[in-house]
Length: 530
Image 1: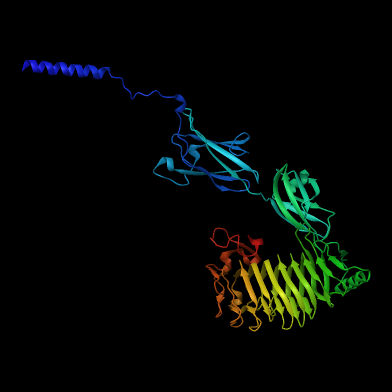
Image 2: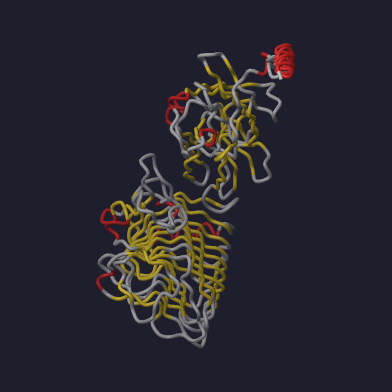
């Protein structure tokens, strides 16, 4: 028995000796180059704009700061143009998580160039230990920048304006074929004002302007001088009346002129007092004004336009006009190709265009206009017996419209797009008056119809037209519009009256109030109010 105990004891001593001599294979040697922070799980561009980018990235455990390097190449990082450090304790989580490696941040980085490819790489650093992570990296390309705010034109000049910034050097002007016409190095005064006027251009001509910071294109704008290309220009005198302008036109025709531009001085007021008649023999006729430095248009009181017999195109641009309760353009049994009314403020009229008798008109186009205080004939009035191919109204504001948008008794196409309509005191009983036997094709897009409308109910049409379907889908009306019996089918209701919807409708400011959650913001209505 004692012998067995001694054998067991010796065996245990042997095992202990063997174990104590065994090498510990779990004691790994550490490569100091691998002693680093874990890099972010997510790193990507969540929103790219012309001069900024929003980067999305997740938390790196133990990081006290993040370093971002921007390079103008494709993930090569041979041309680092900017390095930004962001301290971890200044970051606010965009999306929190119980898993710290899933905590998401979003940071915006600006001062980028438009139409430029950028590579960004990010590393995390623990400044307490000096440990760093490997790089995350992403590539993106910025879209075109647009700092131009707009332009005004005369027959021989354009005035450009842009968002004031020190980072502009020159403006290049090109023709329609993108051939350089002139390059202008901006003076410090022009940079400070954010404005320049380019003279000695050709009337009625399309141009393209580009503004640069050295070789970086910061904006592109399509331009057109007023009037008719290569036409004879008649500059109106302050003493001119409708009768004297008519006489001057007849004299120009007698001298062989076929295309004529009648130009009113920028921001100047004229007492016209009657009908200006386009005499036979004129192919194309333009009446144009322009803004002065204070933003005031050429102004004509009590003016109407008529045609003696026939003409090709009639253009009316950049004028503030009143028509003393008459028709702005009156065409009884006349022949005209296109009518273009653009950039005008027109008030106190029965109709912008009235067509009657056996008239033949191609297209009536109204764009970028302010129209107010119309009479009971409708903004457009087309009687039976004539021909009109289409009536098109875009990017315009209509206020205090009496009775209706249009009274049209022939087959034609009507297109209303991006219109802001506000009626406070005057009332429209309906928008359209048609002839069911002459069905009209009606397209209405991105329009806002609003206001108490003089307290009367608004109908789509003056009667039920079985042959004229009209859809208002994609358009809006405020809650102070009273519904009539013939509904605006498909229109979206805005649960606000105009006082709560517009910034200051009483004073004519129809910008949408910020923060109200309007679904059509930046899409519906006249773009001047975006």
